[in-house]
Image 1 (cartoon, rainbow, N blue to C red):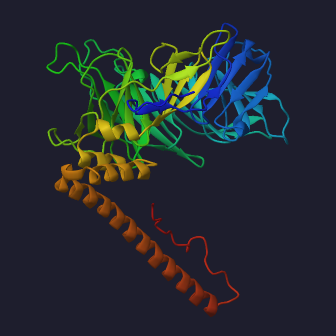
Image 2: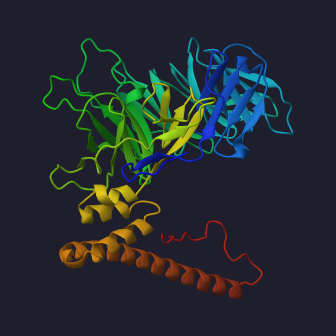
Length: 463
């Protein structure tokens, strides 16, 4: 249960996914692609309970205890289950009604390699990531076997997967700071341009210096970014940490584009909510947000300060059996884990929350009304808050600041103008399509009006 406050601009969703908490007999796993939590009791022999974002993605079953489960994930649509128990192989179980519910297994092809993990990229396509490269397979459930589609040999320290874009990031080289991305789509694997993360200090002799804890991959404003938590040494001129954003396009080279100034040191975690980068600071139990489209007049290009002052996430009331309800936040326990883009999990308490942004507190926390409007206009569900800002400004009596009012309405008019232009373009293209289709129909009434390759693509006006 949430208690509203005008100070907290971040909150946990009101209806979290609840699951059996982690214990000595119950292991908990999270699948970032399907957003499913697996509670595995006694290696699966006494039950596996899967909880997802909705009831359709939830399922319960049992499987034979063949050893400790290291990783477990369903393919898209819960069609095939993959379970890793050993460093050499992955086991599979069909969950489709037309196929027998029997296990089959696949060892990694590379000799002496160890499987670091695996990612489903389609309902029947899976990638093994080993310490010596990646192996891309098609799963054939009717034959209870796998077909190797493509592989790539490369020394791998660790990996990261972005399910939204089906891009896998591999950490390579001794220092770990050369990242090699691969993109997957419809049975194809494409090697993207590798890039180097700039380390604050280059160790001598060379050793692994970039950890997966300091890297996150997420989509911001429709573009894929690699976010690097850069911790400066205390001996440098600016010891405070920062988040460095690298834009990773499908084609072309990856480039450093944005720097988010954290103005403090310590342990951090990252989320992305409503195109805002959220940085959680563990020791202060506070969070700050950044909007990479907001320009700071007193900073160099693409260097950003927090949009709003640091605040804690709104406390969430977790009922405790036999005692008074307790208040907790997402940073008061070492058992809380953060996943992209907007997920926070407490394995010890058995909760999965989606992080949310509350816009009303920003009205009082961001005094610059022009900057406030730039911030609000890019957010979901912003209309009522914008109306309240306009009402607040115009009902100020003799204190109405006309230049500020003019700035605010100029920004509103610009957005409305862009909407009208998009709507007019859509209407024009739709008219051309209709007239052309009718002309083609009259010319050849018995033929198909459009083939798939001839079908035009329309821009959609956004509201």
